[in-house]
Length: 442
Ligand code: VAL
Image (cartoon, rainbow, N blue to C red; front, side, top):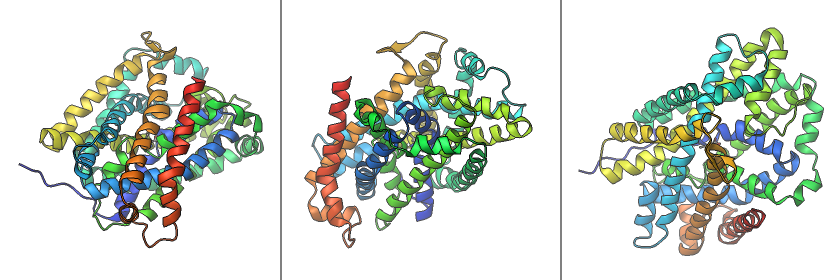
């Protein structure tokens, strides 16, 4: 028996949910450490270019495919291009969502743990010792990861409108307010000038480093939830007549703004306390607690606000990743949403356990990186751009011009010709170019 497919309650519900998907650990945790490692402004410039030249067309393309097909990431390709190899892009999307959520749940669990720590008085003393002790334990981080996944599962269990849409409508405004308050506060701490120089003054030397290109492009894919089937799946719950271009522009604009403001929360505070921006994935967990402690009385409150923000942003993204897999298996197994959500959620949780243990409890390394760091780099820097590339080629080269414009909802728009050009040439060439540089460098 075919089940009736769910739909968004309103266009704004969709936009907020897609924004919730985009804005996540990527904007705060990953953006800050990748920018710290990538030398600041050079990373930022390449990232912004990737967002504009690659992120925009790829998002519109995912939306076009999803809205046109009205089905999950794999079936969409089977429906639009039956018996062709393009379906591999859908399969890669579902795989990416699975793999990303597995380690995303671990970091999400860390943020919940830190939120709790600030409820009970904050983190005092050596923050890197606290962080190291916590993540290298075999039990505690797994329990927090479980809690994070349980919340994610509970929301997806409730469905598209009652779970995803409703929770996003609450979380996104709260997130935005918290972020702005934190940025205003951080800018008063005395490190603003140095932070601005670090973020916005180009360091030409860094442009010669090939690894900056791949990590900045990977970041653009990760933060915009591209190549992981999420935007495609969310767009499949849209009414076929819903507008796409303006939605994509709003989501991309706000996601980028969110990352920049998050940078203005983290870097001014960091420089005010003379800390190192190139701390790596532990940046927000090691560096920020030092700052919160030094702030004295208000520190615990600011720390609580920050990690609450991080946790909520992570949850609203995690639900989109889980939804990609759930949508796929609901159709594939013809089972109810509730059952599928529980089973798939549990499997992804288990898949994440090695990532959690790889932080010190057990030695699990691949190519010299911990299992978690490997999963993060493999999905972000390789799987997502590759999946995105196949989708752009699919739409740019197998759909007629009229179809591209019509399904992208951009036919009577002055940007139509520019969109066609980017979809067909600019985006695929740029993705390929960066992937090749990355491969040679590796
Ligand atoms: N886009 C989100 C983020 O930036 C997830 C879904 C990867 O964290």
